[in-house]
Amino acid sequence: MTKFRTKLLFALITLIIAVLIGLGLLLGQIFKNFYLDTFNSRVQKEARLLASSIEENGTPKDINPNMIQELSDILDVRITIVDKTGKVVHDTEALESLVGPQQKRVIQEIQKNWDVKQKHKKLVTSGKEYRYYWYPLRSANDEMMGLLIMSTEVEAIEKGTQQIWFVLSISLGLALVLIIILGSRITVRYTKPIESATNVAIELAKGNYRARTYEDRLDETSMLSTSINILARNLQEMVNAQDMQQNRLTTLIENMGSALLLIDHNGFVVLTNRTFREFFNLKESQLKKVRYHEVIHYQEVNKLVEEIFMTEERLRKQILLPHKLDRKHYEVYGAPIIGSNDEWKGIVVVFHDITELKKLEQMRKDFVANVSHELKTPITSIKGFSETLLDGAMNDPDTLKSFLDIILMESDRLQSLIQDLLELSKIEKQGFELSIQEAEVAGLIEDVMPILQEKAKSKNISLQTSFDSRGTAEVDSYRLKQVFINLISNAIVYTPKGGTVEITVDENPDNVFVRVKDNGMGISPEELPRIFERFYRVDKARSRNSGGTGLGLAIVKHIMEAHEGNVEVESEVNKGTTFTVTLNKKWSSH
Image: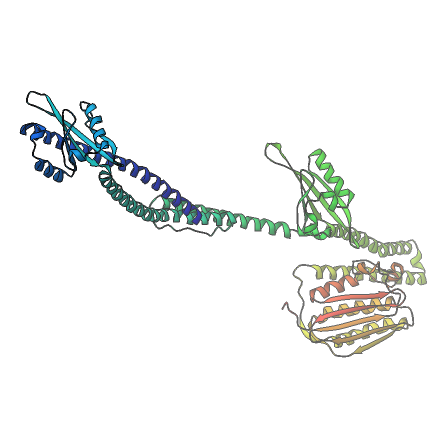
């Protein structure tokens, strides 16, 4: 802005100087002409007055030389009187004998032009420039008696002209200095607000919408500053609102559970969210100026996008896609983006992860199938043996007792299944509460050991306990006993005769750890993720013959989740299985 101010001031000064020079030349010439006209008029009038005086005193020869000399001194001019023959009668600077040939030539030239309207002329005499004025001398009867010639050096006249130029130059110079000072002040006054407004405009262009300019006067520049400030405030409010909306939209898109992909009309990836990038294992730097098929390597998804491009219609499709070591179900929804005037903008594709819904649906199907299967076996047995008894077998005491024993056993099995279902339903019910009290975990294991000893004894299995600590924790004793009974019972069921089941307890400052280890048949890696599902059995024939319902580990898992604890399993086929229960010493939810 300083450059602009300098340029403006320089242009203004140049214009003023040009105007002042032109004005000076014009005024100087006017003053010079006025001075010369005034001088010429004055000398002509003096010559006329002097001629009248000479005419009154007689002929040119009768003129008193002293009077002529006195008039010459008063008027500061050279006076020459010539008779009608051209002879010099009087000359205030030289006698006739001393009049030079140049002076005579001048007199002769004047005599030739004495009757012209112009009564003055500039001639060069003796190397100097003179201005001559003449007036005819006439007698009473209007006869030509001679000429009155008055002359003065042009240099004397030019000295007056130079003084005019000097005064005019000084005046215009002072005026120029004054104008420059005032112009500088006015330029600074009016360019400073413009400079401030320009700086604010530059800051606004850079994105600094908090920049403001000063508003200190009530004039046009103040209106500019006010307008700039109003514009800055409006831009700041608009940008703040836009940033807020952008942040909301970005937060929503980035944190939505579904994967999002936006493709432009040329097939280039425009927008993705974090879920999409995590699923396809991509980084933002990999998504710049790439087409969708370069980042999506699943043929089903690419076919869906191509179909939307061709049909320009919305599509919804369920697709099973591999993800790391797992497979996930996705409901893929794609829709074309059509702008105003039916302008094709691109495609939006959303991937909804429905894996858990599929699992729940499968679990529901499995649950119905398993419950039906588990109920069918004992009911079929009870019905079959009852019909047999009614058909006449009840008359045989031995057969009757044997069948009744079987019916009782199947009834117990049916009761156990229903009891486990009710227990699992109660645990899974919303609002299920534990009765938390401080207890020794080792003591709870000792309480359930007598119940399990008989079962282990029947298979000649050794139950061993090793308590490095008593493991005091805040737990629901009744529910925790259920956990230990189920885990130890499973260990006994899946351990061959003569095997060993070992229960250990240890702790750290925050947790208590209970491990149930057996040397039984073990569980394969493929089956480990499913052992906590309802009705899932590793060895279906053995577990069913043992009277198990397939709900024990599901109950264990839910009880441990209610305790905010954890249950983990490690197993190796034909070598054994270890279940580890982790309990918090302090229950944080009470």
